Image: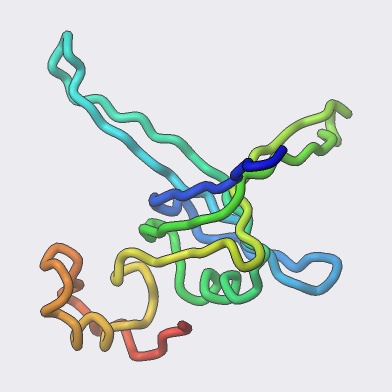
Amino acid sequence: MAGSLNKVQLIGRLGADPEIKQMVNGKSVARLSIATSQSWKDKSSGEKKEKTEWHRVVIFNEGLVNVVQQYVKKGANIYVEGQLSTRKWKDEATGQDKYSTEVVLQGYNSSLTMLDSKNSGNNSNLVSENKSSLPKDNLNQDNSDLDDEIPF
């Protein structure tokens, strides 16, 4: 189909630490579970409502896998950009065909950005040297566990 586009952009929080596995070809793959939420006020009751969606993310890009392995942990706020992919597999217990839809990060058209410094690993110098350019809400007051190794 000419003129089609398969692109997914998500901003959310990790529900668990990333899972890193080795594939048969020796390369690593990272699996993430990202939560995105929306909230609204119910018109009839005035009550605040919230809905959370969970997204499976699979990263084949080796550079991004290394960053995820070293710097991304449960609760981290991240931005990912990739493609939607549905794969078919057989449930070993029942023998039935199952389907999983995932956001896949692979190749040049994918990206991952860590959005908060407190969960993104070791980059206190970035935060402390650029305080004037960062909003006050994003500053981490306790920078003792951070150093200046930034992988990008």
